[in-house]
Each structure stands twice: as C-alpha cells, then as structure tokens.
Amino acid sequence: MKSFREYLTETKKVYSFKVKVAGDVPEGFQEHLRKSLEKHQIVTLEKLSTPVQESPMDFPELSNKEVTIFDLVVEYPITAPEIAAFVKELNINEECFRIRNSGSPTEYDQHIEEDQAGALLDDPFYKEEAVIKPKNYFGDDFNKGFLKDLAKASKERRKELEHDKKDPNVLEAAPKLKADKAGLSSPLSKINNASPIKG
Image 1 (tube, rainbow, N blue to C red):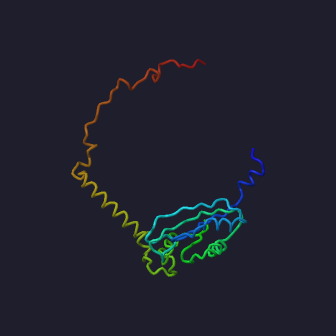
Image 2 (image 1 turned 180 degrees about the horizontal axis):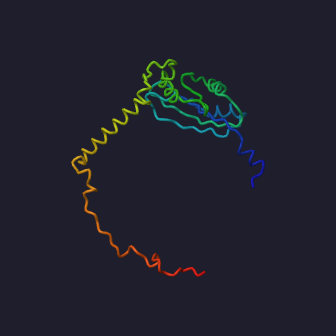
Image 3 (image 1 turned 60 degrees about the vertical axis):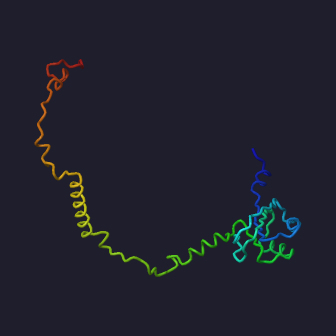
C-alpha cells in the first residue's frame, strides 16, 4: 500500500508552458530561462526546433522562420506574462516569441473559432429558417396522403416483381393434398386403452 507521502507527491500540481521563439535564439537563452525560473522549481525544460516554415504557427506576421519551442514544466505557480518578462530581458522582439500555457488555445484553434464565427446561432432571429407547415408533417390530411403513397409504392413494387400478372386466387386453385392417415392415430389416444395410472 502507498504511503501518504507518495499519494501527496503524485497529486502535486504542475504548471506547463510552451515558450516559442521564431528565428534565431540568442546564445545562452535556455540557461538564462532556467536561472530566471529556478525559484519556481523547474521539473523539465526541453528544447525542440521545427524546420523553416513559410508561415510558422502562432506567428502569422512572420515568414520563412524556424521556430524553437521550449517545453517548460514548473511546480510553483507562474503566469505567462511573468515568463514573457524574463524573455524580454534578452532583448527579443515581442513579435518573435509567444508563451502558451497548456490550457490556452493555439493559433490553429483560434483560426477554427474565427471560421466558426458568424454561425447560424449568432443570428438571434435565424433569418435562414425554413418555413415549416405543420399540416405537411402530421394530422388527418398527412395520414391520408401517407397511406396513398404507400398504396402507390405497393402497386409499383408488384409491377416490378410482376406479381400483377399472376392469379390472385392461386391458393384456392391449387390441388389439395391427400392427408396420410397412417400417422394420425396413436395407440395412447384410443378409448379402449387401459389407463396407465392405476388407482
């Protein structure tokens, strides 16, 4: 069984961020970031780079830039603006870096939200609403029409299968089969048999 301390360490909250830098990363950037965030108890600070992209994700105003991403996880609470202040100390232009926490939407998510703007639900009067007439969907007139359509579909199906050309009284005209009387009576069903139950 786990000790209380093990349960406590497993439930410890961590704060994760992605620090994205477009273009050239200054020398010693990772070490400067590590020193600046030491008091927040860094769990991981990993670096990865993307290839040069025509329009890098999260940097729509830049083109043909490589993006370096630092995955940062800390145990002590910190906010994205606080991390941005540490990044600005290295004289990196604000256009060239982004700080995203794990809960914030990426540029891709934001584009999807923008594309969905102007949805039908945004219009309180819903001008494109189809005109629905109740008599077309229920009531006596609808039921009568529905039954007519069924009868019409049934006739078309009979024609398709050529059942309309066959004699409808086919069962009455069929020769009757003679019953085999040999197996109709049973020795147990005869009246003269003695009762199997002795009383």
